[in-house]
Image 1: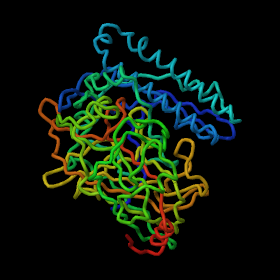
Image 2: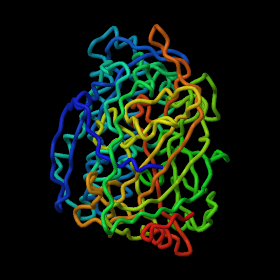
Image 3: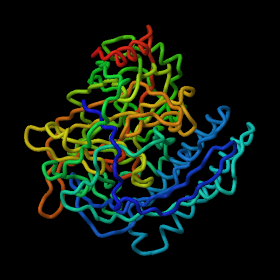
Image 4: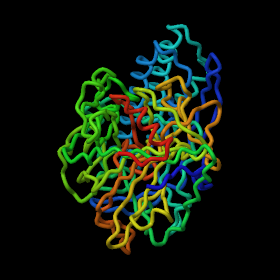
Length: 514
């Protein structure tokens, strides 16, 4: 597959920023609090269809606290991760209440603020203070006043400002820091779960929380936007290593995420496909990963490759229709198994690469782009026959007859040379400069993990009244309304028999290995 690591020009329509504050967190670490309202997102409603509707409160936007914590002492990280999961649980519960109280909202203009957003702020403030305590207890320092500023949340309206056939992004990524917090959460309460799938503000989709008509575009009408790759320099590493790990035909799914929410059941609030390591869950350890079986043909590859499932909203009741992470949290419809899944490591156009360290964790993309904005989005959607022309981030493609949906990922390819993870799961890796391919700030080039997933999907159809039949969407957090831009991918490097060095050697010597 081609490398989709070009810089993306962020559309102006997606940059409505509600608030932003730069906060110091002891030891030189930085906190960045951002609440980005995505004015481009739109809304609709209906069983097995979506429809544009008038602007109204659609979802809840809260600062992503986990992304801001870049200097958490190692001894405090488990406790902080648990509290971050609690924060996301609170948002999930608040969104469920938002979805189930539409009549009350219609009768009382202050209902959302008084009954949902206000109490949510109080809960978040108490949880954030526990994060402060966890950090300070082990000798870390934190600006307590600045941290408190992250407690307040806002509501977002669902306003359709996407132009017909429009998708103004050039198929690259716009994240120089790498990684992202997958926004993972603890299990919601029973009351929250029971109402999470109720139709919410005419936000579309089988469960009432997306996608909408404006979330789709006819690929044949989308503008070409794929930029040229950087020119290979004298020391370029031009080889590749392909590992064949299957398509998850054995349906290995769970709603955990051990990277961001270790020890938290249903930490992702959405289903994942797993290939490679077959024993990945919230309670996995480095030792258990090394002892697990692998779906890869090369049994020395025990790496964990996992991504949110794609579903077609055809009215089907999946195995998780009444489960957390599934239907109880707005992830509904038939789970699609990819027709093919290519996992390939490629080189750098600027230099040789060093082997990936054992247990390196990388998350690419952002599961919360609706409320975080697109700065860390790294979603790429296209169709077979169009991949070299069009890569979409904010919309799902409607492919022509005979063409299949293609979903690709290009992970961060620069490593700080020391850490296998970081407090916000971001700052230990980075993307190379999109123009030159050079790693900055003393980072080292590593083999770039790329994935290409192909799905056979009956094309959704947009009706004259604005509805969409047989919509498909990636699983996500309920308040993120199943936006295409929330797509993301997760990886833990686990190898045996010197495989990491072999991959680097293939890449560095220009060989095509598998």
